[in-house]
Image (cartoon, rainbow, N blue to C red; front, side, top):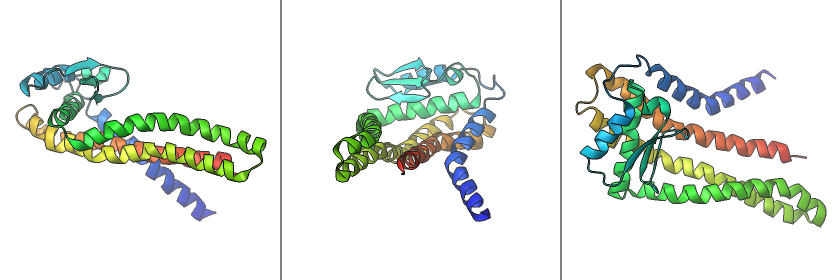
Length: 227
């Protein structure tokens, strides 16, 4: 029994630990709130102009910090778009790093964009198949039909895991090959270089946490469908 509890605790730590660490790092460096003279949104616009990223916009969004390669827009959450703290300027530079990747035709970003579209459709179809499996098996009384649909459902949901894993090298490149050199070229206070690295690592780790949550989602479905 003790071993089961320990195993469960380790599993929960593995799944939820990265997400909790990311939130901790981001929140920690939002203080002091006025550490920099410009906001994250202003820095993003400045970098877009400086790097001559033609056609790239900067917007505030409630959908989380991200770069949209389809609409060519850097989107920042309200706290980072309006914030003047270290997290705001670092995240802004990270998202501009994605815009740089797009301008360079960085292939992992292209692949991620294509897979994300496929995964969005696959997840919806997979969830529908998983819900329909018990009904179809009951109506047809052919176990193999249900098993095939079940396999299809889990494969489609598993696309989300693949997307997150493909995303990780893209995030690391945007953080450390593109954003960090920009920030260290004069935009950060010298004592903020090390904290900025932690924030950039957290930005990449977000997708590791998302992949683990997708795996947890599959496990929940397995538990739900188990006789």
